[in-house]
Length: 301
Image (cartoon, rainbow, N blue to C red; front, side, top):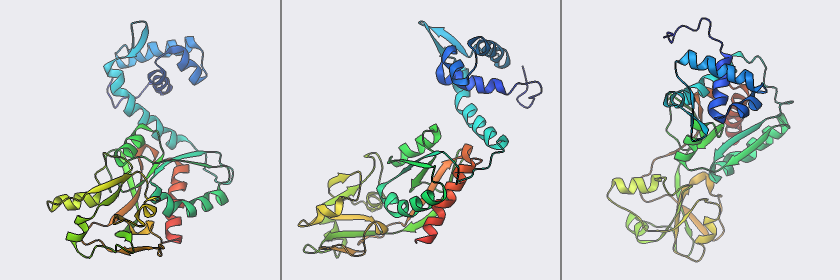
């Protein structure tokens, strides 16, 4: 059996074929994907079976299915190919002439705070680039990064380096309460808990910082309305005793008919970060975009 440290004589192009075969699970479609002939891909599959001492794909009920060994190879292979591509690609990302779609996940809060400045920068410096945004919950966004479905996620995520994720801190925000001016902002924790609340969560599975802080003290609040976006929430407060507790930057300094006040309970700061997969560390285009995001924050704190 070949040592994992011995690449002498290994045709690395075989790994590209393996990636296509695992994605398509059919020799013909893999050949189309790679712009190769079917016999060439069949020959490569035969060589892969020798290289890994494994059938790789086996026929079950009239179709090809990957072996357990092949399934184990799929994710690390995709990561390795992405990193190798970045290492050997000598092309410099030139914003002025680039034709590329960047796939991002961010909440409407992050979009409201960051997107205006970022769009101005991208449109000016890279007119051929496209920003495609989705709004995913915290866990779903990190899963999409790992799966390669998005390039970058901006939100409140665990900071630091892990085996597969990288993050870059953008800024810290703080929580504030918004309420109808007639009802007034809650002056005490007891008053805060006695009134109904609007909760903002991109996913019902996401455990928000407000509820986590209350639960740590053995308390909870009555959530009357749960929304995936905060932007409509202020309109729901007018003429009611509802309370909205959200990031301060998401609130205009003057909300007609509404009052802004600090929450009557200590809440953690809100660290907004951008997160990406380690396999994208060598992606020059994504490096450029991350720089534009950071600079747009610095220009409009």
